[in-house]
Length: 429
Image 1 (tube, rainbow, N blue to C red):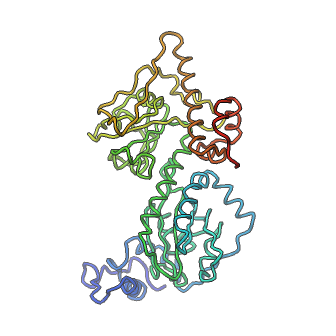
Image 2: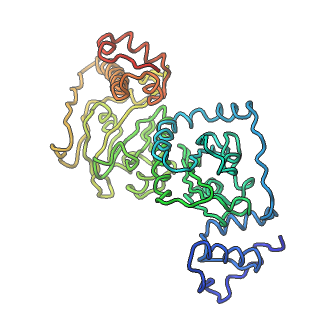
Image 3: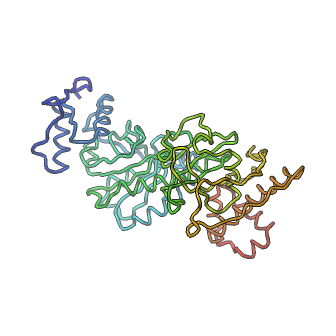
């Protein structure tokens, strides 16, 4: 390429090119490519800034738009290594991917999930792919969709920028990809890094629905599951201004550590609290106006509780203790050393019609307090397993995936709880 990014002019009139004769999106993209690749002009307003930045990076790497991309065969060993490296991600995404693919079954598109390096770890299998020659080669597990390999694509831009993106037709850098339209959204981990990218792609046509909203909703659900699966030693606080939004992709989540620090927030929580999602040194009292003991008390109650945040917003909350197989909750969470003598104080009166009421058990006095705390944590652990088994219809495998534990733990629990075993007959795995 003869161009360099520093040689671009701002526009012909200094304020951005005015596409007087471009009436369709295809015409605007064609005009943008002409300005960028032939005239050395920055095509502001014709394509998104994310696409322009990606074109500039690809040009700086001396890629030619006429290059023929090679989709090399992915060996069985490489595919297995990719899947083994991303077991936690795949477990967190499994339920949403199944639901998403069922929802999109009537649409000829591919659902793709890439890992943090841009490598595909899940791709929709389409047995009728004769009319999708490109996607049949480019969407196999183990194929790398990173921008350095595939140029400008929605997964590549999202991985690089951590922002949702849509790339249509000739917005793709390489000419050989112009038959595609792809939409992608990021999935973050507890460190705030992009752990995965969710994408849907079609070949030879455009989406006839709001694909960005669909991808964004499922990416948020997967991200929430991944955050919780990585929070082995946290209390996860769920909250929202409307109780109807809890247990949906719109619920706000916060991970609270043993020393009362808010370790992470999902995107919804970040927006409700008005703070960055991932920043160190934030105390639970400063963000939620709650002492750690009050948050812990919430974990002993099944009903929703209403609080008012320090920023003035009233929200409905619920807290859960999370632990993995083989880790005793009392020792995994040094929370257990705290005296849970005070019930959570609510600052708003709960709506009796919309919220079920639970009863908080009284705290024993004297030297038996520590033993009582341990017993309550153990009871909470068993109750969590029982409720999850019930929600999964007795399916051991599904309940184990939901809890992030082994099936052996659930079988041992059932053997030790004959009453539960009689009520819940495990479905075939």
